[in-house]
Length: 284
Image (cartoon, rainbow, N blue to C red; front, side, top):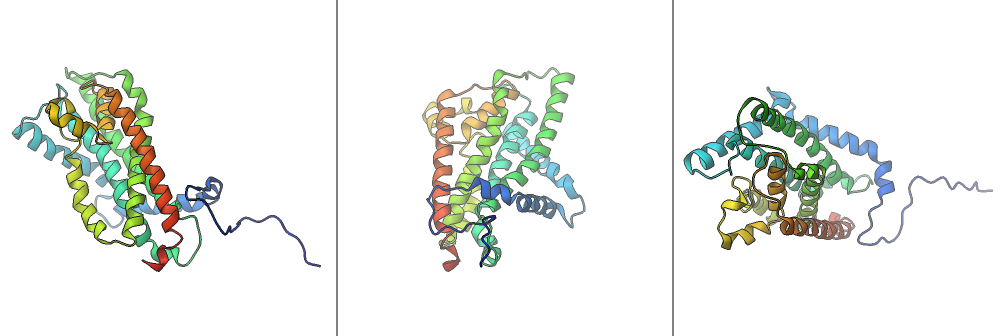
């Protein structure tokens, strides 16, 4: 008599919907997520002389170059905020978004050898990238708040907190969701069209200047303001600076638009990702 055992830990289904995300299955693979986060974090500074200090060196050097180019040479206004704080706020937020976007966009190609050998929910890879990038963001935000505290308590700089600082957790989630959404869309497309990898490399550098990383939206001409304002990352940057520096303003319309666009592109990304993961081994 064959013993019946219903305590299965893995159920393989013949079909699944395009928007299906099995959160229960992802939770079962939480140990794998933790290992991937640890691997990404350690591999960044492994075999380097300065080690984890690179997490702080990158935003410091980038901020110094931006202050020199945009504020000292080009005399771009910061709406009264100290240039170092203004640029560091934009660079810290942008680095998190661009890192999530760049790393998730290589999900299928980079991990093709693993995907072909063992089963696990493919979405675990981009989820681990968002989490490991969040650790790096935490270190860089700590640096930003140390500089912010210096200017707030020891100088006469015109900075102050506003109610928009309460939206800080929402802004972090939106940045991660935007990077994840755009990243998994590109990852799904690059599994077939490799040209997009090269386009993304310099495209994301150009994309940085179409939003307000280095300049405030208020200094843009009225004709260009709507174009830059409807960049989905612009309202996140403007809200972050308005919340912690007290400069600029909260653009309600642009912010609502950004939230809608974020959910739309994340939904499209999940739709394409779920479809491609079933067939990508035939094309990679």
